[in-house]
Length: 418
Ligand SMILES: [Zn+2]
Image 1 (cartoon, rainbow, N blue to C red):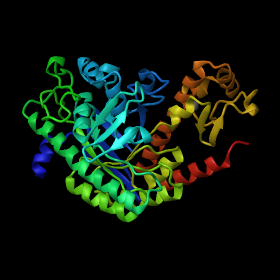
Image 2: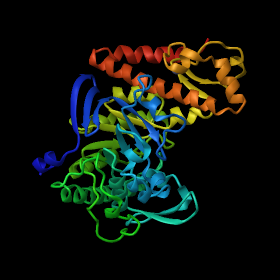
Image 3: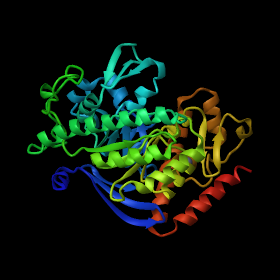
């Protein structure tokens, strides 16, 4: 079983340095090597909002991998459009690695608009109200068509403050869905093992499958992109016994990596850190550990200290659109009148192109004038700050200086603005 797995494995993981629980590692994918710990900017509908791909690739930012959202892309533009372009990478014009989520969390966030059953989740599209259905099998089909290097198992998320009973029910469902996700994924992988799909020569659209049309039927295998990896997701809300059980039973299914899901969904921050501290080091050491949807640069550093390798979060882009900059001295809100005549850059310690060129005064003016450039500049700086912080984290772990880095980062952050 393990030899079969290594033959078709699409991802290798090599730890190059450790300090305490913190690890610096290399994830090799068919589209290059990703150095971890890594922050992955979120490209919801095929775009990291407010920033061009050239900027993501520039040394200023140096994004190694970005996210795509299965739910959003499935609804619009739809899988047929993306397949006709030859997959998500070609469609959006991005050659580096990608990870697609399963759609589970997005559908969960629809709240009352969704209905969960054993088979999957029925929901109303947020675009036109149409009735849609997403299941582990459909999610795998859609993610196979998108063709990201890393796909995620279809899961259900319990609220942060879910009772033990509710969290158990949700965790058990997630485990059953994880098995179904893995089985569907393996059917694709095995079927295509002898005819590996070259990412440069996408399967013609006429051989494509329609996930909607085959929702309850057999799983077509004609268009599968090989060398995709599949990660399992650990749930269990804030209940450590459930989290541990979820971890153990998810590992039994055997994934290429493991994510901690269902955090930062309403629970208190100490609770989140407690779960990470307990669970991350128990994830098999030879697999990537991914903390989903978290958080601030400080959260990232604290999670790295507890053994996490991969992160994604909408904060740098979302907050960039609402006038907020993340800086080495905390959050700066350009709406604040104190910045009216402030000639300093957003962050005096930042060397990004925005901070080298523009003042707080100017960016505040742009924001108040409703200019789109305000969001563009803030998003650029915020992503640069997140990505540069992670670069610093990697260098610190490799040189045995992570404890010092973490202490100094925290001290500077709490010193605030003068
Ligand atoms: Zn900057």
